Image (cartoon, rainbow, N blue to C red; front, side):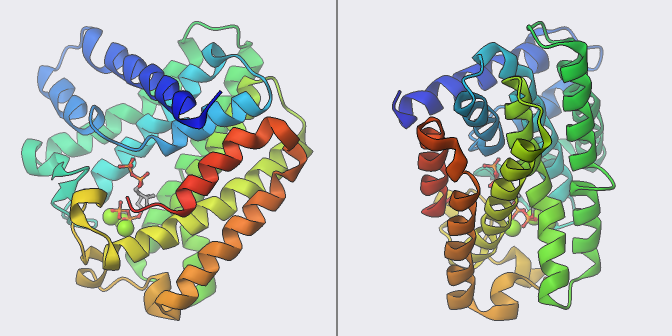
Length: 292
Ligand code: IPE
Ligand code: IPE
Ligand code: MG
Ligand code: MG
Ligand code: MG
């Protein structure tokens, strides 16, 4: 299958599932439903779900077994973006090319949208009909919870707010705020394809951690050099918030060099997948060139 066809199928599946759970199923609070739909149903790149499906594909898994995990990780990611943009955090007014969630629905509703998306992610994995066993579902919930909470994204976001002085502290913070969810994505994809051995999961984690760190350095560069009509985010937010970033600590050229090195290390880590890893590699290669 061609990568573009694969991506189209994957995105259709995620969009359908998001629509089912966020719009079609009845909910008691219409205002919360509207807030969540506003933040979730738009032009996100869906990189994390794509990593779930591509990893599932690399191990010849069934699409149906990856659906819940793909959607769940995107729900966690969307929640992280809603909260990240709040005035108490990055105070950013534009997301995915439209006013940030809190600018339209208010801070309180934006906070609650995040609160509601987190348990929904776990509910989906626990209950979504598929051939996954109870043991696989528990493993997935464990991975997603650990990657989003005090050992993962939330910890990274907390450290981000305290300001990082050294490159190693900044690197560790990036691994947490961005790397952890990407690492969870490939592990979820593997589990959905009935892979559970720890050495395979570790190799995939290594791949995703390299991509995750590179992805965040690219994000830093896009904050300086990106085009708003492509990124859908304001430019210069990091300098406005006086954030130390890779480019501020080591410069633009060294940041670009680091991205190249990290992608090379990432490709190395999944060498063992052979021909079955072709689409995963192609997708990573596309990310390397990303402008949004
Ligand atoms: C933005 O993530 C936040 C970071 C971790 C850098 P994405 O660039 O994946 O955002 P969307 O989902 O496409 O909007
Ligand atoms: C990643 O960092 C944020 C999350 C983990 C949600 P940023 O704050 O740089 O992400 P953007 O630039 O707002 O998307
Ligand atoms: Mg932030
Ligand atoms: Mg931000
Ligand atoms: Mg950023």
